[in-house]
Image 1 (cartoon, rainbow, N blue to C red):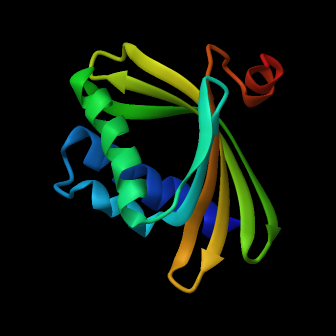
Image 2: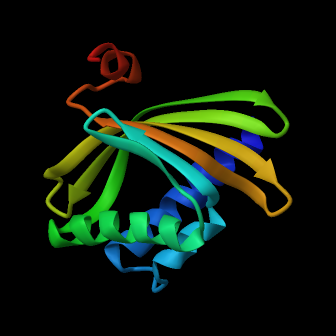
Length: 145
């Protein structure tokens, strides 16, 4: 469990935040080091679908990060988290993200379920399920639906 947990929380998350807030100078294509393709993305407020190739995955991320930057995004607080390892090549990671501005005001809060798979390139996210929430815990968040 420790390698997928470390990969996600010590590598992926700080890189995502740094690129998102501009302190790491990489374009949105950095995400291909973390998200695979095809990538399945679903939430209850929009149609679920597949980002079938690298450019589609980059476009999905680029739109999200542009929106957050416009709202003054600086960092993400992890309010709750869970890691479930299925086997050496598969895991589920769930988090509640609180995406915030420098003054600690919240831009958005999301409960997110990531399906992680180990590939020859290392760990990659293969699917993302998420919903916007006001909950403090994952259990509360999933119960809202």
